[in-house]
Length: 193
Image 1 (cartoon, one colour):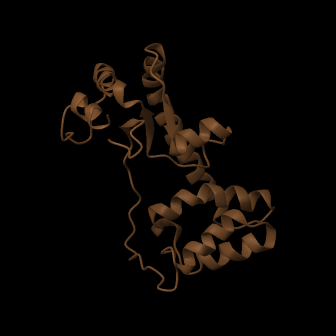
Image 2 (cartoon, rainbow, N blue to C red):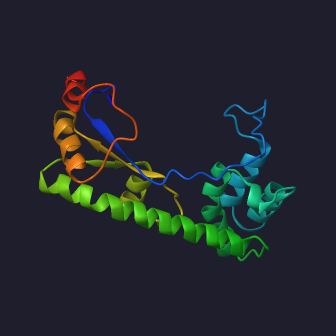
C-alpha cells in the first residue's frame, strides 16, 4: 500500500483471523465523542485504574454480561484487566477465566511471532530495513509482555523501492496475499515515487 509521505510501503502478514462473535448489538453512546459506550469506558477504567476504582469499574462493566458472550473488542482488553485486578489484589470469579483468555492470546501471539521470524530474518539477510507496526512493534520496542497486547497479524513496513523484492521473497517463503492486489508489486512501488 501507498503511504502519504511516500517513504514506505507495507506488506501485511495476515494470520489467524479468528474473531469472537457476539449476538449483542453494538450501540454507540450518543453522548460520547469517540463512539465509546458506558460499558467500554468501565472496561477501560478497569484496565487502567488502581485498586478499588478498578474493581468498581470492572463490577459495573460485567453487570448483566456473560463472559461467553462478550465481543471481540472487549476480549482483547481482558488480559490487561486481569493483570490489573490481580496486581491490585482484587478477587473476582471471572479472574481464572480471564487468565485463560490471557494464556490464549499469549499462545496466539507466540505463534504469530514465530511465523514472522523467518520473514524478518530473510529481510535482514537481504539488507531490507523494516519497521514493525502495532502489536509486534509495541512488543519489540517496549519489551511488553506478549500476552497483554493481542495480535491478529504482524504488520511490517518496508521501503517502497524494495517492495517488489519483498513480495518475491515472501512468495518464495510460502506467503500469499489475502486479497489480489490491484497491481503488481513493481507497479505499487512505482506509485510511491
